[in-house]
Image 1 (cartoon, helix red, strand yellow):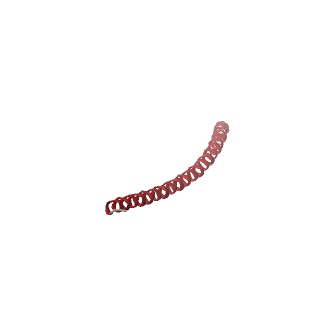
Image 2 (image 1 turned 180 degrees about the vertical axis):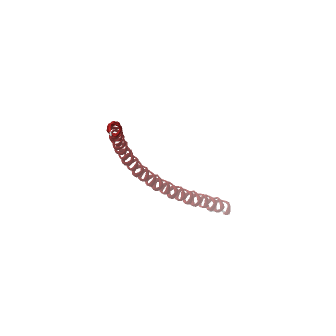
Image 3 (image 1 turned 30 degrees about the horizontal axis):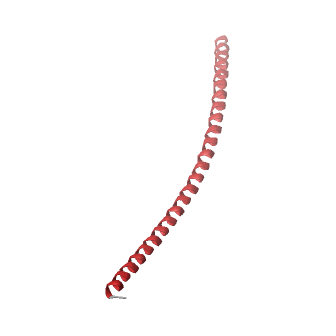
Length: 93
């Protein structure tokens, strides 16, 4: 092999080595990105479950609030009626 051919061969080997190393780095990066994406998907799934649980809790609290409001209005009506009766009794005395 001539010195020129040897130099060309060495350059080609170096280029192949550089390309191989670059490809390995890119594959490692892709693997890290895939791991990160999987973690993000898992986190999103947990967040979705938590949001669904909160929606259910808020719904139950809202229902409870409505029932409490209805009972409070009923109690106010009862107190108003009793107050009217107490006033009438007080007037008689």
